[in-house]
Length: 530
Image (tube, rainbow, N blue to C red; front, side, top):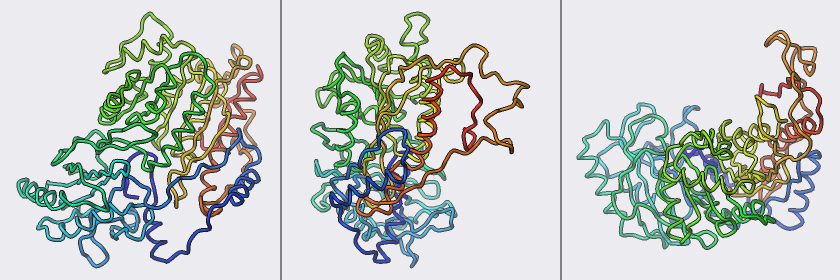
């Protein structure tokens, strides 16, 4: 995969390219009967899920659906300059690049653009970047294209350490002049920027880029709201499926709420989810690490006449570490620096017991401090988790959110999962977004009695839950599935929240059992040491 975002949209382009070249047959067409059988199959595979798992929501588009692709500039098998996707991973020793015409995910407009760019770079005197030698100039080209506004954006990453700066800029101007006036499958190029980067790994999301021509951002329209998108900002890669996702998140987040509500949007990106619900709540407070994304979010609010939204540019754990829980106290509140923080604090303080949280973290998941603050903020009664990594980081976060309350290690009442649903944002891949609704557990006190759960003999204390080998007993494993949006053999393995539902079920079972009893706490060691 060439998309280097830490986001959710990691797609195995190599797999698609290889399948296309092998001439794989068409997948079975989706039908109501097939959908029903797949759903029944999930239930058979995972009979004891921690909450109801609803039927997958399909993407309205399945061909050329990606509005963002990052193409590698390298050499093909013949040693010629090529713009496309790599045929294998660098760790496996593969740096060969192949044209992506046979893939199903890239739109025709992007394919037309990179074909022209490839011809221009073959004429260039500047060399293509060599990942092995770490020398060269031309590295990657990121493209965004939106059908709703018929606009395209390009971000060309170059390395200038081994070339004369004046020559590099002269070549950049030649390329921009050549590609600027044309349309690509009816899409016009509206923005062209360059990112100068000499490092080995992926640039930081806040690394500045230089606008060479056109506008600093382009626009997409989702559910009647127009969003400005800058080159490095996170934005859902499947626009039409994102509308389906936002509608479901809105339904679960604010459906049935009566009292005035503040929506806390964690990892908000350009504000897409929060702004889409601005009419259903009194106020929206968004937090995101990317400064450019927050700038876009503020622009989006202003452009759409939305005045009840505040956005803060900061790591969520930096803002929320002491941000939410301190909102419940007027005295001795440490000031948190950043534009919009003071206003956001007042909003949450006024909201008191009517705050709904939505979290849409990157693949790494929520920082443990964010989870802690969500638990300790009594105002948050409802939480909607949108996960792009349902079999990885979501599992750990679900465990942390749902484990039994403990005064020191796990303060705050736990949440419990109410229902879950996968959304197919990435057709023809194994990947799915998973939306899970959590609500605050309001049963008997889950805080263990004083002195309960103390370790004896220090870290070497006995654990009654361990087996004869000194290890924690493994939880019962359930089967994992398979199935695609078109075929029941690839996607349900992932979307059925295979590891997510299994591990979350174990974790939530522990939480529910713990919360329902006043028995002393024990040192339960989960598989994997968590």
